[in-house]
Length: 114
Image 1 (cartoon, rainbow, N blue to C red):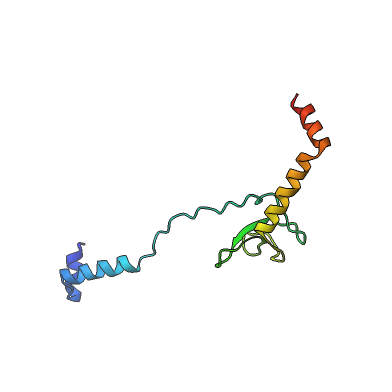
Image 2 (cartoon, rainbow, N blue to C red; image 1 turned 45 degrees about the vertical axis):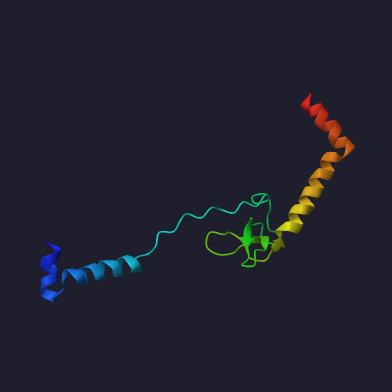
């Protein structure tokens, strides 16, 4: 059955069909672009001290970044921990650089690389 035969009993004209098509297109769910995951340097290395779940990246509306134990479907956490990202990343950077700069660690690195 063609569209004209379906429209005729309801008194729809071609211009009505055009409006209908435009309305259907406007109300159709929009296909969103796939979101690019946030890449925080410590994601995958941190665990919650309360439940052991992974700490995930979290961005606030004001732009603040943090690592958080997120609860909810598929999140696997308790929601009880949130740590500001900048302070934690600076601490980890300083800790790792300090360890690598330690004389004993430098000696072990030389032995390992030779």
